Amino acid sequence: MTSKQKKELYRKLIHISLILLPLSYYFIFHYNRKLMFLVLVPLTVIALIIDVVRLEHRTSKRIFLNLVGILLRKHEFDNFTGATYMMISALMCIGFFPAEIAVASLAFLAIGDTLAALVGIPYGKRKLFNTAKSLEGSLACFIGCFVFGLLFLGPVVALAGAVTATIAEFSRIPIDDNIKIPIASGLVMSLVNMFF
Image (cartoon, rainbow, N blue to C red):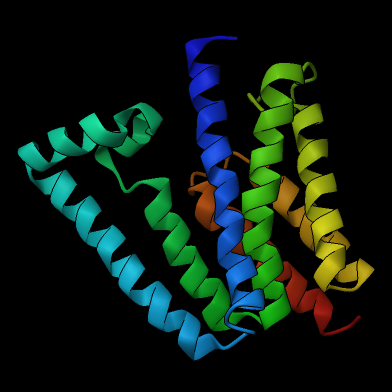
């Protein structure tokens, strides 16, 4: 395994801790959107401030890179980090989607994206559509999302969300996964939920 692959696995092990966000919305805040926003809005503002200061001031950037630079992807050195995008998508999901769909869509990011890397990096042999993504990683993403989705949603809605999250995860659309996966799956699940 290359150092780049090890770095990605470390990122994903931290990434799985993001499951605490949707689970908190369910278990701690009991789908209370206002209370969840009282927590999320300040955290999102802090993440935005850290990123803006880091991007605008050389000394701040150097300190930031010394602390967490090893976990950053190349494009995050001169752009917002995945954590900031995650906070923005959490606000959007909780603000616009029904509670169960918000929980599932955010969990799909934490679980699906993590499983795709944990399975795809060491075991992925069959590449999809000339991308770095593998069939094995995408299957792991789909299975993890679908199983979790069944805990909160009906099977048809969970299936639609899991398929969408998987497609978003391996797609080459140039939007950060932390926005792409939860928003795309949340939109599709909300539409399907109207009919099933």
